[in-house]
Image (cartoon, rainbow, N blue to C red; front, side, top):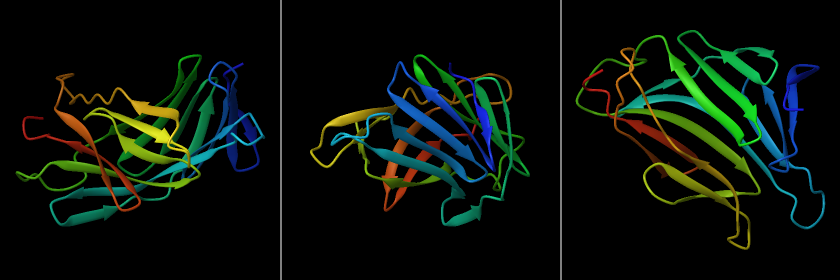
Length: 173
């Protein structure tokens, strides 16, 4: 019921428990409500790139793969992955190495978003995705980051014009 199935150049999976469907393509994910009435919504996220201070590195195009309830976009130095469960759609990144040179500035994973929902900060590790009536429809939450040694690293969400940023203090990684 939560498994991804191939559809042309993408994978799609229902999530009946949460009331949405997810479509993954080589650019990112789109989540659509199963309801087609007045409460219907759509929200898309795609990896724009990585930044540190004023330096920005654009994301490379990805190769798409799926196995059961897990879908992966493999890029040159990273994997973006999605796991669909009754609890929702988990979204994560695995970086082979730091995408930008070390500095005292935090690393930012920059995500472009689009659709009928808007993100609103609900604390450093949580975003509410709200509709035009400011009603929370979905959550993007429980931000957690680990380094290669499995040590937790401080991280938080930030919002910028058209972007969701995952800001990571990776100085001790």
